[in-house]
Image (cartoon, rainbow, N blue to C red; front, top):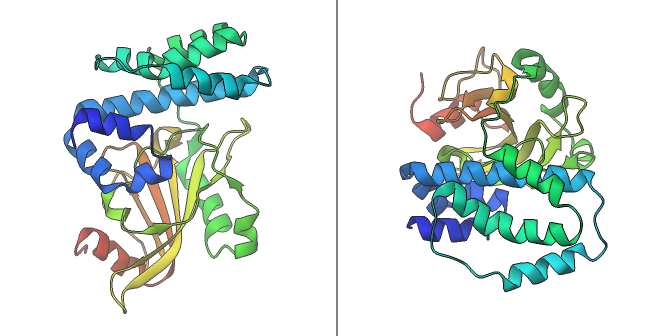
Length: 261
């Protein structure tokens, strides 16, 4: 897969599909430009989504937006920032001008292209304790009561290749603060390597930058025989907290990353 094909496919995949797409993951592993492109695209989508939730929208907005998108023609590839603005912002901004939302979106777009560091908001140890109580041995009824992940608090990006062979449920989200955005995304998972080696449980994904004291290790580790694994993604952007309900957590770690002492 080349860069052009990757960026065309990006708009055709949901976040969940993108996280487990082997070709997408393989290209991202070897292409720093596309990793930057993906990160910038996610930030832009997040900001526009936040703006649209706080500004009144015309009733026929969706129909008019789709019309603009269908009429928009693609241009030659541009440098990363300009390309994202052209291919994604052009159609959105033009339609928002028609519906009276141009000022809000211009503000969101302008802030996107400047550094916007996120301050840590939560203590990881405290959050882990709360999440363990809520998700470890969670019942089906309690799971069904959780809200679908809204993608406004952070973008999942792609999951590490080590977990892409797992089967996942639709993601749910949890707000740990008071800002009505999700700070944690959770999946129910299952993974079968052989008739004897099979696992299931819950995988939580947290944005590392929001949590103080999150694990620094990029290999999963458990402590005192607990059925809990925790580790950080290779690029440091995500923190994983895994509750293993079926099967051995240590054996799951070994199946994912080889023999881990």
